Amino acid sequence: MKQIIINPYSLKEKEITQKSNKARALIITEENMVLINYADVLMFPGGKIEKDEANQATLIRELKEELGLHFNNQDLTPLITIKNFQKDYPSRKNNKSENKIVCTNYFLINGKEKLKFNQENLSEKEKENKFQILTIPLKNIIPFIQNFTSNNPRCKYFQEELLVVLRFYLKNIVTNKNNLVDLHTHSIYSDGDLSPEELINLAKSKNIKSLAITDHDTINGNLAILEKGFFQDQEIQIIPGIELSAKVPKGRMHILGYDIDLKNKELNKKMKELENNSINSVLSIIEQIKRDYGIIFTYQELKELVNATHNLGRPDIAKLIVKNGYAKTIQEAFDLYLIDAHQKTRGNNKGLSYQECLNLILNSGGIPVLAHPHSLELNEKELLLLIKEMINNGLQGIEVYHSNHTKEQTKLYLEIARKYNLLISGGTDYHGKSVKPDIELGTGRNNNVMIRSLSILNHLKTK
Image (cartoon, rainbow, N blue to C red):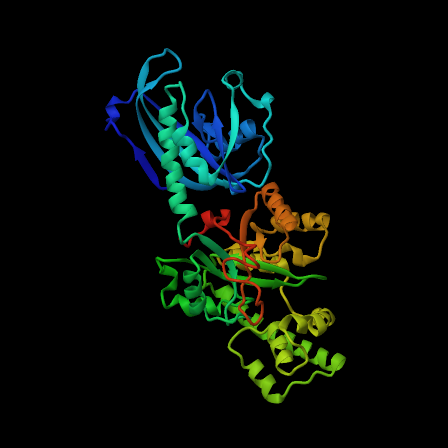
């Protein structure tokens, strides 16, 4: 974490008589920020780090006690460290003043839960000093702190630090232009409209700071930009990724792999196999719609399809269906023909099991994440059973945020991530105007995916 030193009186280390370490959280609930008023002093939730206790452990413990909120490490995004030299700080013990250094690690939390303040959770000292929870609108929070008055002499030390942290947050997180994240996108190397270079340039224009190219069952798009140095771009973080299709009895299971080693031999060998499998799968579906609906493509169209430089999928067939006038849109082609044809031919597919997908990602140094869980078409109980089984096989994360997720689904997947300590990921599943015209890069469908931070980003080697 970036460190800021507050030392207006130029205190030297030898003048310090006391040191302490703390952990605190900036909790955003809707458009409000949570503050604590304790003994007529404003502060962010959190507290002192006990001996041999980690920052996150302190914060999780304090937030449970103070606010009745249950978080785990995956919910905490490191923000900033403040090293505050405090001259003549009034001591609670003997009413004397002392020179202190207080080192506080601040974390950012987007809190979706309601505050569950319970007076009984507080210590006797907290009860005695009228512990209060305040939720202040973001637009008003700095004036609120600046205008806050108190007879407690400790108040000024906290206010000064609060303002430093808030100004850093507002400058670098809220108003920073490069603050969107999209970890689920597709290029022309699978079924997207844009080349990887065009995708990256579009991401930059939309102020996206972290982008993962996750083509279906291929790394060719990532390999194409590897040699050109795109992964060293200082303007944007490009994360090598993939979206593997796993064979399941019903629904669709996709597993995202992040931070994979693009030169891994096992991975590259399997990609070639999947490329051949995709051709056979598409040809099976084409044969099925020919039998069921009398849809026939020309020899030239099939030749161009088989010789395409990207992995084939159902969107390629959908485009041909639209081109030949059997449907008006890609989605209509799926609804009228392809969903049914896929169901009938999926038994012939030589796809990977989910265990193979997980192992392939793990063995190439990557992080495996279950994509858009709703597509599995399972009820909640069935989904939980499957996820527990997948965790035992190496699953490390879940895609909580996705353009197709309802608010209820997003809430459920967030709860699952917390319950099973899974990394949180998310993205728009952007393909482009021809395949998914209503989904925009970085913002999803009608701005329903506006991701600022994700716990998985703190676990990537690609920085």
